[in-house]
Amino acid sequence: MPQVNVTELRNRLPYYLQQVKNGVELHISSHGENIAQLIPEHNNVEAAQTRLDQLKGTMIIKDIVNTDPVKWNADADNL
Image 1 (cartoon, rainbow, N blue to C red):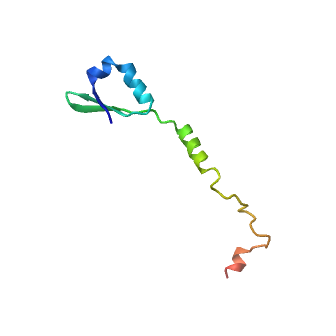
Image 2: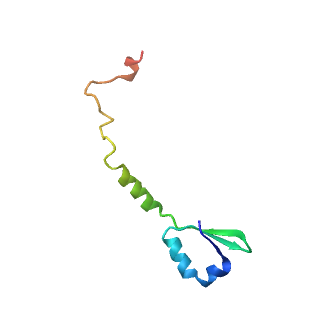
Image 3: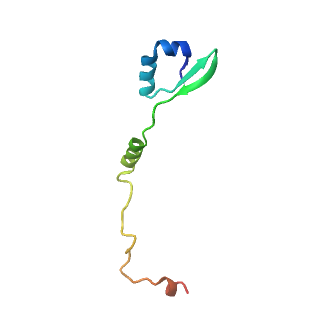
């Protein structure tokens, strides 16, 4: 993870903001000590859609309410 001091960040802020926008996590330091971290914004909706797209075609869909035409009586069957 790249590290930049406050002065460098201040002088080249647009450049570093573009880096973060592109997915780079950035440590900000002052006098050699890490004081902050700049990370890209996480879009939950986009992440969920990506995950659903990955799962597409991997599930089997069936009728879980009526899987068997035979009438099932839980009480009588389990006594």
